[in-house]
Length: 420
Image 1: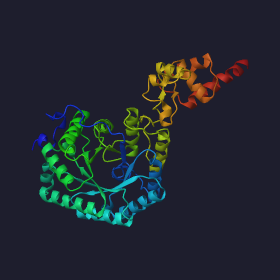
Image 2: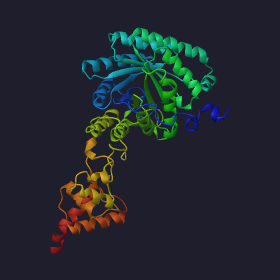
Image 3: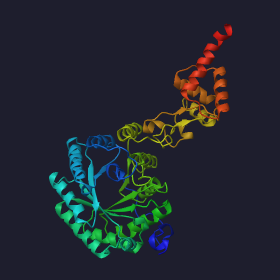
Image 4: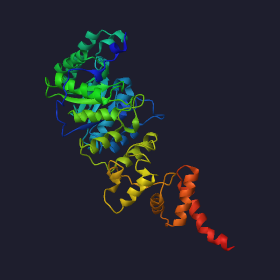
């Protein structure tokens, strides 16, 4: 079988809409997948307790709208924790919506969702997120009876709706599925009562060109027939484009995009929440206060035991630091000229609760030294500036705070040594 038969090339899709089918929504939502799809990844090296999960939901609540909290049929502990987490959130008046995950064509995955729903007193803000790869290739590969599985999916959606749950149908590997096969499974889910349809880039193979085409195709060929159905995008990061593809979904009028904190998720992870929030707010698709974002990530890093990459946009240690002389000069002017930091950064550091700063490295200028000394609370002098710049250029590396203080102390004590 050829690669083309296995993976449909949406980037090369012809004859689709050349303009957006919908306008961006005013109430874009973020579905936080950290506690389900995120914990399914291989990044964590310690178990996460129910108390830690409760703390996570409280920390994340200012930034996201919805939490996918468990795959209840994977183990009875998952079902117990899901019930506990949602009850805790309700008692804490967090005013969020929640979902449980499971396979669309497996009744054993559906029943625990119904049980939890009933134990919550038919909590109206609970959604069943059920997934199925409806492609012919996957059915042949797995030895599935595709028709029987879709028939079971239809029955399960109807049962969930009869019980009172919201339902999101997730087309697993949608971005690898041919249009006719994808349309068939979406239409059957919609006709059965699904409230939301989700395009999942499970392989993380999509680029913005292909993402634009599949989203427009879906809204044009399926969305127009079911105007009340909402649309979600679930992007993975195997090619490093999960956030870019989620941004495309916001632009094309999707209602909700999915993310996970700290780059958690299968393989290289889902779209990262901090990157997603930063991009959506910067581009005007989301109106949200991000002044606590950096602190949120620092707290979650400690909670889950996962380090924040130094160069992580917005929340990493180097996100708003510079060792370039030219950049530092603009930053130095920023202390007198408001918003001058935007010369080299897309947002003000304060937007995410960060502070701008300079380091002293091999490409630095006196501006770096002045800014760094001010940060350390040390007085500026030309002699000290010359010494620090010469050392950084000789070493060819950024000077640590300890090294800088050693140079300062050395220069301070120099007159005393000379006098002796």
